[in-house]
Length: 283
Figure 1 (cartoon, helix red, strand yellow):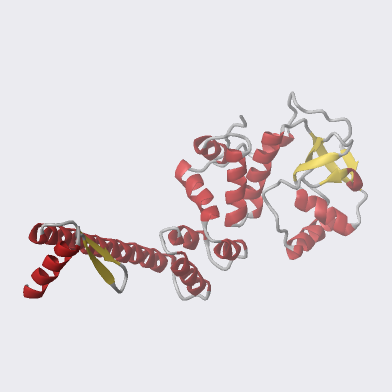
Figure 2: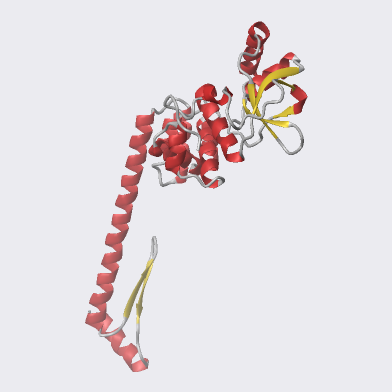
């Protein structure tokens, strides 16, 4: 287990110190020997940010080595520093400084998440997907993930819950159209159509997080009132069945739908039907 440091995860500075897992053979690698980690949490990279980083590297050099691990194909996989690698390629650099370490898949994922959280501001869905992968793929508990990244367990749980939102709303979170706060508030809706409509309004700047929370709460209360009303209607029909059963001396069924219903009366033969008809006519 990678230990926490400085309030958020392991503290990336410790990754570049000498340690028992270090398998350093050379301090630089050709950019063509290195490949990105397709499973890393960050999926979208800003070309503008990469270009700005390339300008900084051109002027000052790459001050922080890229952390990589050996892979079975013979090359090396990026564990932390993909933005630096992309910027180096943009500059046409042949070689980059590296720190080579033997790391498991789980450790690689942990470090990738921590680096992105500390340095690159993952969007809410990338962050949630990273946590979820540690939980689902590597069998970690929410509590263990929370300690690893320096978050509370509830923060991790609420982050992962964002993945349960409708796909359209997930895309809005990925694109920055709504905030993580909006996303958490939207989880309070039970009606998906109303949830999406509220998300669209929030994306247009029409609703704050607090307003979305109030709308979700009102939606839940209205839904609860509808259920209570339905229950009262159900009780009325049950009571009516019992009353008619007692009054007519036979089995009675009240069948009802949204806008209409049917009264079903049991009879045994022609004479019983005639007697029932006469009783109903006289009543």
